[in-house]
Length: 254
Ligand code: G
Ligand code: G
Ligand code: MN
Ligand code: NA
Image 1 (tube, rainbow, N blue to C red):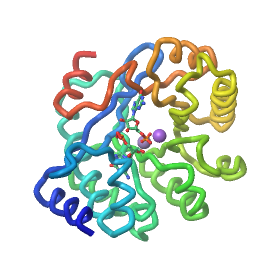
Image 2 (image 1 turned 135 degrees about the horizontal axis):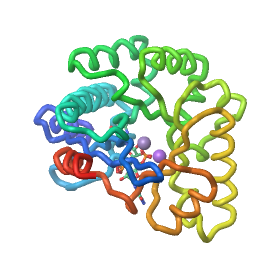
Image 3 (image 1 turned 135 degrees about the vertical axis):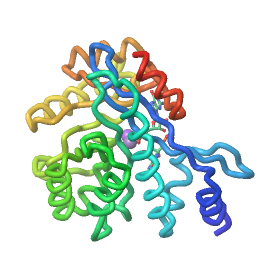
Image 4 (image 1 turned 90 degrees about the horizontal axis):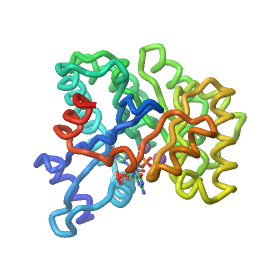
């Protein structure tokens, strides 16, 4: 439990931080960003959320962390609203864990954070993984539809890696489909990856969703995605995750 205690203490001490990775359209305009959690373990140093989020998910600490992420993102959106943002900029997306999503008052929690920080709801979006949605399919469908009515869009994260059935996908009223990084890496060299990406892109189009490719690292990958009809991107080729101030500079200079 030592690790969970370290996280709890880190959260209380204000050691957690949100970084922002910009998302771009095919003109090179910034259309949004994904908020990514950062925390430095007192002994192990910088660690990926891929390591500590699953540990937090084993206890209720993920709820406190998720709450902090939600509120911090809303505070940062408030700060962005006071800058001169480009017209292309739409929203900031935060990642949501299973335990958060299944809270009976999850929607209320989200809407309260929006209200409390006095930001337009359309500036906040949620990223939910494919598996998370499928595990709670009926409730997820209702929740996403209801959030959408309240101007909060949802994206399906890591698409293609889970066990989603296409029947389910059709029923999920998400606005964005994020092509998992694993299909984007080497897309220019691997005909298999290209075929899968192409399938996801046509699927998304059929379902009237925006398609965003994550993990774009090279010009070749970018060109390949454009040829396949994907026009929204995120990845090191454009920008890595940045501390808020640097992200704010990036977006106002773009
Ligand atoms: O930021 P990358 O840098 O290492 O993130 C690794 C993984 O952690 C990704 O799958 C990402 O979705 C997840 N992640 C990052 N930030 C958050 C967060 O605030 N909440 C949740 N639940 N997951 C996050
Ligand atoms: O699962 P999720 O999509 O939320 O993962 C986001 C993770 O991907 C973060 O860890 C982020 O730092 C990482 N990431 C973002 N862009 C790139 C990229 O271009 N290449 C690689 N390898 N990782 C990336
Ligand atoms: Mn994500
Ligand atoms: Na992802």
